View 1 (cartoon, each protein chain N blue to C red):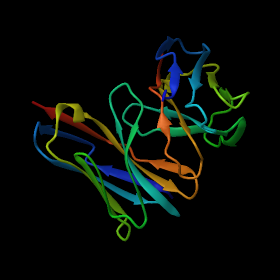
View 2: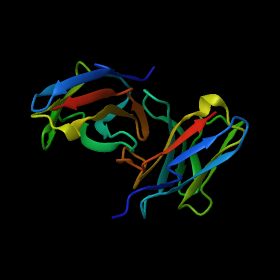
View 3: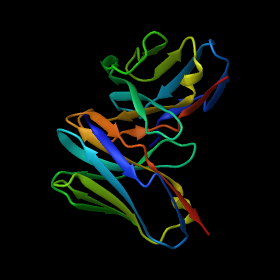
Length: 111
Length: 114
């Protein structure tokens, strides 16, 4: 069964600190993996996309890694800001167009 | 470039009533998706259109949910009659191509069924 699991479920950090979110997947056939950021009351916005051959991708203070052997991905946020408070969803594309969504990690950044 | 537009943003109805949501995708995007996102969960695909044809509606509760995209552009999703468990955010997304293409999401419609 295609599945995407994320941890932790929620996370609280202080402004300026770094954090890492985890994503484990069992999806076949694997096409690509995306991290989305979803602000409260808004739709998800794509942060990064990685295919099988890519093991790291950066977007500003966001750096995603992918280990296709262990089927794990992480999203590292550097020097967190209050605006980083959101849910982060790991999404794996199975085959041509089917997306498998994780349940997300709720991040709260406090001053 | 304008994003995916959805309306209304919020809707409160009583159970057994009907409700309709509207979505206008990004211009030129052939593929349109409707998702249901229950609080604390990831989005669940309800239906996927390629132009005005249905590609996947396997998770759409067809006894009460219906969707159409008659002219291959904007789309409506209807619930009739609504149940308490339909309370969720309904997200519309569009992509240029279905094969692993990036999906761009609208702001969603938050539905509360009392």
